[in-house]
Length: 61
Image (tube, rainbow, N blue to C red; front, top):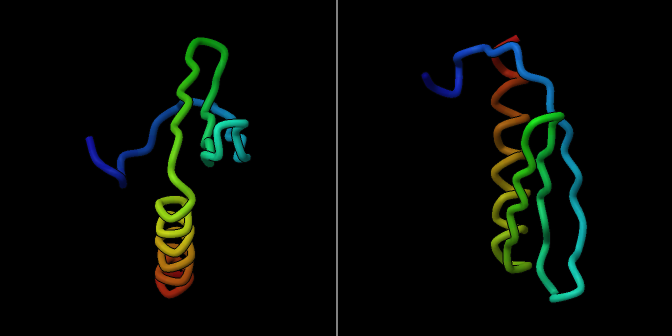
């Protein structure tokens, strides 16, 4: 399985700061919770990667 493999899974995503100065991506569904904490610089890098992926996705339409 890879990034292009579709799945029938529904999940939610919350993004926000923690009280420890980290940025948390919190993925959850009815059966699973995945908290992922990042330093602010790492979070900025992830944001840049998401913007680049969005631009690339627009080009494939």
